[in-house]
View: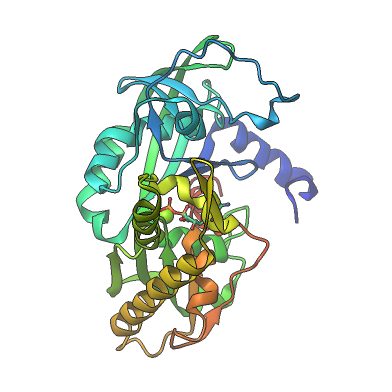
Length: 358
Ligand SMILES: Nc1ncnc2c1ncn2[C@@H]1O[C@H](COP(=O)(O)OP(=O)(O)OP(=O)(O)O)[C@@H](O)[C@H]1O
Ligand SMILES: [Mg+2]
């Protein structure tokens, strides 16, 4: 059933609730920031940069689709170009692979950038977000403290027009990141359990992101401490090997977040020379997949009663061909047509609906 197919009284009750609060999921990853309100989804790179003064704004190509979305924001943490705009226009760019730095320096700006295009100022926002397994306990209260309040900030559009914003986040719920995928599989758009089987099973979740690989077990939807762990076996580990080889051949240090497209295209052009990446990528990915499979098989050695293993996160899709056959157990196939980077954030939003809108 889609949103429009709901029946009469249910629809008006639902509509009233929807009018009162906005329920949003935000996933701040080391690679990408993801946001959804259940209808639209946005993804941008978790990169911040100095706001350059763009003097010549016209593009020679017709149509603005060739330009990156203009994410320019001023928060209490400063003025920033965010995402692909920072990547292409800022002189000074920062991204981080350090959890403390991500929270201290990036969290608020990335969250507000994500919310800017998703929510309206007038209605309270309820936010579900996540943390990697191993940082969950240490940082969850800090996240709530930083985010659960009214935020005054401004956005600047591509023509330089400034809009002041006032977004009131009245509730924040933080969950361990891979549970986002679990809720995505378990709940429908109305926050109700859609898959009874999953709710009664023991599920192993492997969430491979840009920096971290998170492993967790959901036993009848309950978190299992024993089977949960974060490691740094994210895609960046493979990318570091690729970047090192490129540096040796070209003398250029390619920033890791500039490798996504090159790796998926199988080549990169540096100072006019094209470097083939296929062989080295396959090698680096195979190594990473093997070390993940080893870690998981060891971690879950005592949990031989796992019913299903789910591989998720953007890195999960990238590594799926290399992982197959190496994991012990029944693995849920990654669907080829889905952007698996979005699994967690979709689940966060559905969980928010489950908590606050049913
Ligand atoms: N369309 C795409 N563009 C870029 N990367 C993609 C795409 N699809 C899959 N990927 C892969 O997704 C990975 C990022 O996955 P994801 O967004 O889940 O990470 P993250 O959540 O930002 O990182 P972490 O969980 O470590 O904080 C990339 O490293 C890349 O291998
Ligand atoms: Mg992630």
